[in-house]
Length: 459
Image (cartoon, rainbow, N blue to C red):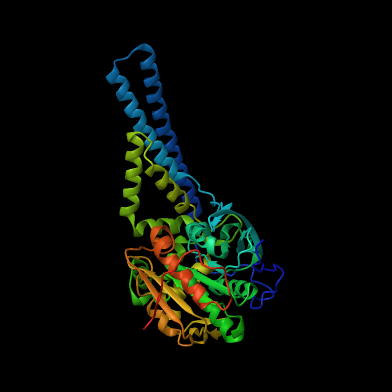
């Protein structure tokens, strides 16, 4: 069985206040937002039912025509109209469905040519996050990886392809963030600093041989947490810190996201898009964030659904249907953020750019990336339009305390291509795992295949 260290769920939380505020968010919100969302989705569902009735009528006409010998062209026309109506129903149902949290679903991984059982275990259960360990039934000694999932509207399962590629060569732990509307108000607030508190806790408990991989939004609290560990207990730093496609320096490469933040009047935005969940907690709803994601790339989403519609009208057997539907089952499954975390992140990371300017404080003390001495690995996608090239790369110059800072930019990769898809599997992951093995002070199992190199960063 695996020898990876487990997390003691009873470990004290060093930075958390003894009594958490009952409701940390006291800012503006929209008391009608939840009601408007309910009315609009209900109307769409009624429209879907009406189209479904139309499909059933065409189906009945087709069957009756076959029984009573209608002309062939009439039967074919009814059959075509049925497929059109069926495609309409399928599309509308997908757009109005309430998507539940997906499962990781890993039961095996392939190691040294053999299928090895994998057990998903919750090793730390906190109000806003569960730390999951994918425990492999093997005696191999592999690096312990803490994969820090972003908390930006999607569940941690969006990183399923990331976990899948790492599992054959690593003991993987993942931060599985909880949907904020499911957390009682009595659990207290969750801010950007609370996020960093969780990471300090998890990294410390996994030990100094942990390899931290942070993705997108999570790179900011990862820097906050690791710099604080490096300052207070240098020997407890992780073995490596990987920063992948994150908004560490948003001004380095403007995108639609950063431009929106630059012109945003935050109180007005919060007054419009912060809602009150049924349990009384103020949240930034996942459905609002999803609309924002879609608005950044409407052409791609429209094109995908147009293709899906055409495939279903044609014969409903095209294999692309499965691929597109699988992607959107994950993409449309969204989680709410606490209102205070959303407001904190927008103001401090994107508007004030505190981390990039060196003005960010964490629990009353400055965040000092220059005190981190462990190896730093930066990764970006050349075609990333969310955290554009430069936002991670340019920030690497601040890690002056580390003698080992490397950077890799993946050609032709967009934002999701950094941690999923062929670019991740064939190019980025081998380089990342190679660097982790190179930087490690422990003797791990022999890598399954030769790893590719990441070049040192010369900022």
